[in-house]
Length: 363
Ligand SMILES: [Zn+2]
Ligand SMILES: [Zn+2]
Image 1 (cartoon, rainbow, N blue to C red):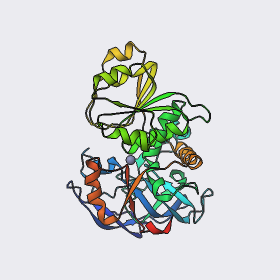
Image 2 (cartoon, rainbow, N blue to C red):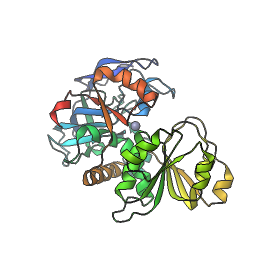
Image 3 (tube, rainbow, N blue to C red):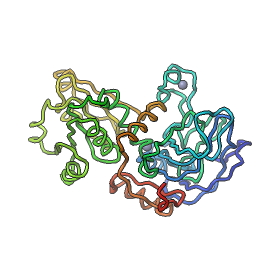
Image 4 (cartoon, protein in one colour):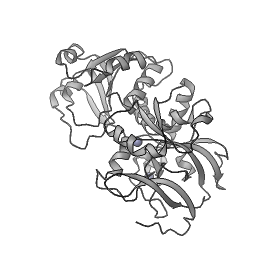
């Protein structure tokens, strides 16, 4: 589809997939002029999320090619519109999954715009002016200021980038569960899956003084979970004896796994009244047996990313506690290789693209 919106006059270099082969190649395209509510951002870094793979390969049948992926963006503001008072040129900022929402519904009005039914995403969405949105695998982005957050000075811009999706995706359910209260630790938390999302959840849980158990199908993750990330316990979910021994031991479980799996054995780990929150998104229905729900009065719910308010709160919390993602930096010409490794879960824990080539400049 060709960009025809008249005020899209700014030429931008980026990287796009053009068909379901998912192969990423350099791509020159147009972005809109900086409007009165917009900020223009010189992109420094962009994290690579599993969602990017699904979009470039059209796994969900919704991709509008060419697609410029990327919704874990950090950069520096270079222009601000006349209506923008909370950002200025030179500010370090981040852009996550959201590009627009209706601004009027009950969710938009109550800072829960991530649940607006007219939500438009940072890439492969349709913006208010009818243009297709292009994401952070590009040198520059124009974003409505209501969908931009400040990045605290103390955080490195590269390792902060994945916080914009992975970070807020685990922050919101943990915060909703009352787990991120200063001085309020002591709960027993389970984190299912130790990947991009899971490793941040472990860091958040430990920063707030909780007992954190990693639940995984890979024995090789035990050392990593305990010794590198500071988890207190490791439960191998393929070992029924280990699962049985930890029955009714956890207050809260965050399930980050995006492959199909059964929820029954995981639910048995929860105490009575415990909550399991799903943030991974398997494309097939999960097995949800009724007995562990009924006999333990347990709750299963979902959570999708976070609002802009929550994203800023998460950023501020990470600045205060000095939490970032563990990343592996790649150059733009390594995107295809990195996507393949990401598909194989061969990364600790997030690839970040060095968009501006500023690796050495300590930004
Ligand atoms: Zn994402
Ligand atoms: Zn709305």
